[in-house]
Length: 505
Image 1 (cartoon, rainbow, N blue to C red):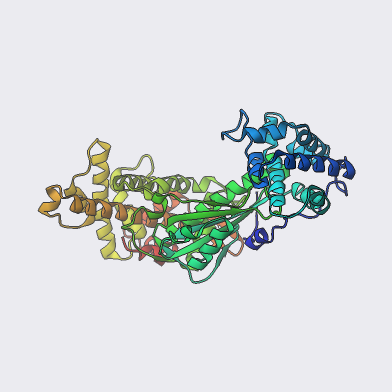
Image 2: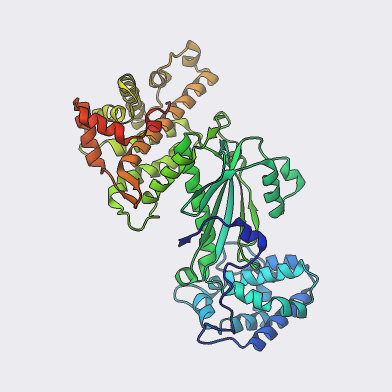
């Protein structure tokens, strides 16, 4: 996979990413006969014309034909068209080219129907473009035959994806080297994306009135590496990058953004994946309504975190995996711990994520609180307070581990709050307030501990990423600091950034 900076304008211009290799001109050992290709394309288009349906509808039938191996019900009419002699001949002619045959032709372990999916989808896009024009079938061949082949021969299909995130603001566009950008969002720009994706005026009225940002990703996948699934791979990886950015924003701000719609496009005149608006669910957009905080994203902190997280995600090929395994494991707890409406799950998984970083297998649980406090405490007073809170957190974990829901008294002690008779009597509002606060505290503590380890274990300098302290090395320093060694205490303060130490919990 190769990453490129966001280039959303390319999709709006509707041009192929690659225009250098054309069938029948140069490059392949077996070149296609131009006359045979144009004849096959014309015969196919004339057959489409004879069906009598709107071409925009036929294009969707062609994009999703019904066959036994499909995960979708698909269109029987679409499959009938692909079984027609004109369609079979067009595919056969295209696959006479060595390169296209290598990408889309018969392959071991992959059924032909699946290997042809992306090629057929591009042909469907040709039919869809035809529907929007006033051209005859002959004029389509004359005007677009070469352009279509350029699109099909693109060795690196690309995908542009925009994801809207609510609850965060940014002053100006931020770009990362992994093909991600974050920029301010507005109602006007959201409306433009809606229009591009076929939205209606009614849908513009349903845009949440909350601060938001766009996360923009642009990815490419090489046909030589991913074959007939290259465009699909680029599309999927663009979604992964957008989700990674969402969690890096959470780490940088402590506020979990709510998901808005996503807008997908492919910078090609005849794309494999047609422009599409992917609707966020009501839960994704409006859940956790009580988390009304709006985060102001600090560009420098965000870039620093995202750069270090590349070591955990395998985006830096030269960074060894073994030193960051504890961080990688802890990171697997973050998503289910934070993005859930169940506060007890946040409390338990948040504890598990911190425990995996702060305790070795042979360590006693009693070391959890002192190590957590020494690692992230801003001063002596907060270190004492964090030790008490961590002990109560361990107590909550103990109740759940033995099949009990933590009583409200224990939750209130963890929160350092008095508990009222109404709370103890089962007041729904009071109990919910305490449990939500417990989940929020657990998420903030997990964030601070994780970031402290991230900044200690992965170093960023002028040469890129390099290994910092291993978990065992950091725990040894923490233990020396707990014993009163001032040099160890100073080293921890020097390695853990102030924004982690000073964050509220």
